[in-house]
Amino acid sequence: MLMYEKNGKLILDFQKSSIPAEVSDVQLYKEDDTVHVLVGDNDLGDSTKVLSSISVKGFKTTYAVGDTIDLTGTTVTAKYDDGSSEVVTTYTTTPDDKTTLTAQDTSVVFSYTAGEVTKTVTKSITVS
Image (cartoon, rainbow, N blue to C red; front, side):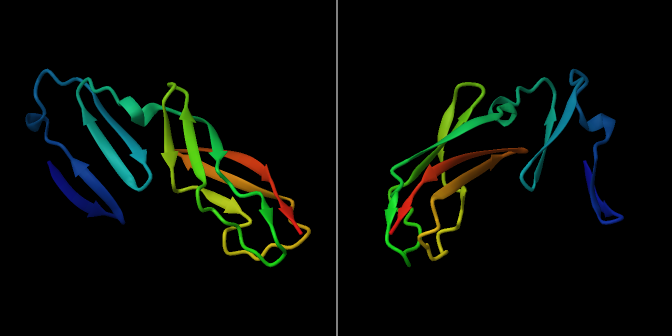
């Protein structure tokens, strides 16, 4: 395999002689900032699952004016189309956890992205 840069792009060049004769399939897929190369009849397993929903538990919903969002004890779970699920920590909130809350704030939106799919959940809050 040769690896080089051309016009600002990384090129991977596989010599035919370096790929076993029984291999008939080469697949590429991108996940975040990583490109994976699969040679042969590989099952992509978890990498092909699609995010179907997220759930949020343990989120504080009552605040005083001037507080910031308290995510202590909050668990965000991602659920996938293959039936699997996982607790995730790379979610975002709107407003974010550094925003000072006012009486006009009535909800917090949780967002999580897996691959090219983003799911959101809106939680009501009381600020007084």
